[in-house]
Image (tube, rainbow, N blue to C red; front, side, top):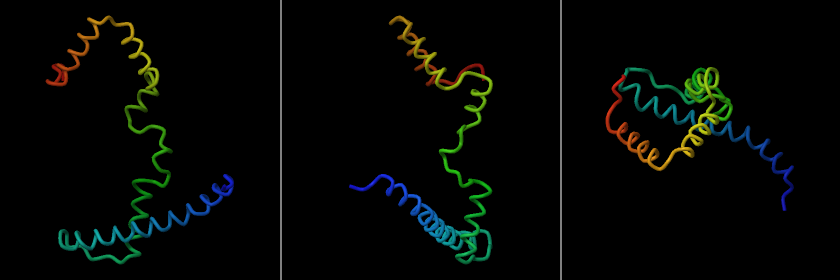
Length: 126
């Protein structure tokens, strides 16, 4: 059986190689898309492979970053707003769960019906 420490070491060694291969592959995709679409559509000049790799890296730096989705603490501005000024997501879920558990069957039926009606038509207060 493989030692877990060796597996982690292999992963750390293979990750940069995989990232390099992925960047080069995305460069080929960017070059193909650029040369297939933009010269005919917008009268741009075709680009070389290394220009496409550079364009991909530049776009990644300017628009996407290299940290990945797990490093962004807030996925949208409303979640950030709620964490700063209101209740967090967990507390809000627990509040709704407690409210639901304290409802009678008639209140639950009425609540479901009201939610169903709100789906069908836009709210009046907009």
